[in-house]
Amino acid sequence: MDIRHSRWIDRGLLLLRVALGIVFVMHGGQKAFVYGHAGVTGAMASLGLPLPGLNAALITMVELGGGIALLAGAFTRVAAFLIAGAMGVATLTAHLANGFFMPAGFEYTLTLMLSSLSLLMTGPGAYSLDALIRRPKQSDRPAYPVAA
Image 1 (cartoon, rainbow, N blue to C red):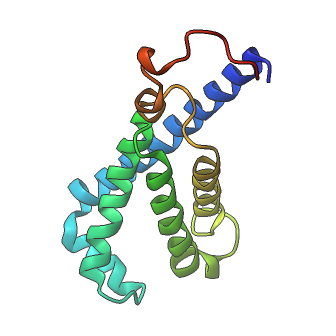
Image 2: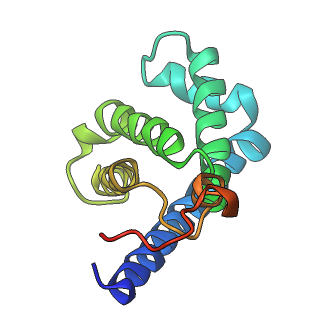
């Protein structure tokens, strides 16, 4: 692959991670610091979800922690998997019955779920902590160029 093409893919993945990361930090922060655990628990209970207190804590952690992870590009595939699952549950339990279009429909949660699945499949790209950690040390690189 042309290195210029690869750089544009990495830049695109960075933009996708930043967009999703901001959305989930904001939504997770809203659950943690505005609605609070009691408010989110009440919302989970109104949806008929089992163990609403536990689910409230889990969704808050997934959204806030997952958003931070996506912004940093750390544990990207794990964060994307958890977020995609959370958005799948949100789509099925809170939005599907309201049709496709916003404000109550499932278009937003579907978009977030599929975007997260894209990061799960591709990984974070080169501009991430995951890539920095995976990068081989200078001493691990061969002394001569390796043919592709």
